[in-house]
Length: 124
Image 1 (spheres, rainbow, N blue to C red):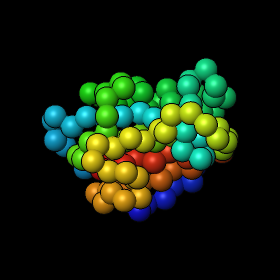
Image 2: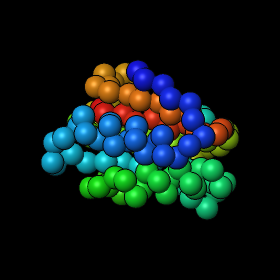
Image 3: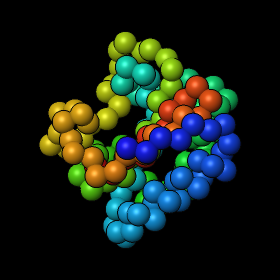
Image 4: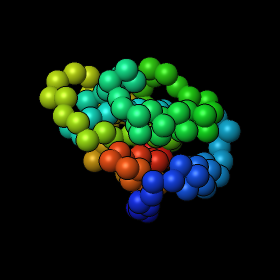
């Protein structure tokens, strides 16, 4: 796993482009997910400025985004984790055929800390 700690969106953009270039398959599906630190999905209207900046950057850089579809092996996941607790709600990562992401063998995982938020770039 690679780590990057930055407050510069241009550094994050470079990291995303590098990540995407290592996953060249044309039919690959991308998922953009925002979650609380305890793993529950968060809606955009519940996030602050820095998380919105990060979400907008990622959303503008990814193609073939799957809204609402189940995550499968081979997919790319752009996971934004906010330092909030939800305690209830919908689990953010439902991976087809895998109970927990910890049980999956991710092919690639890059973690970026942007202000107080985390962005994980994951190839399942």
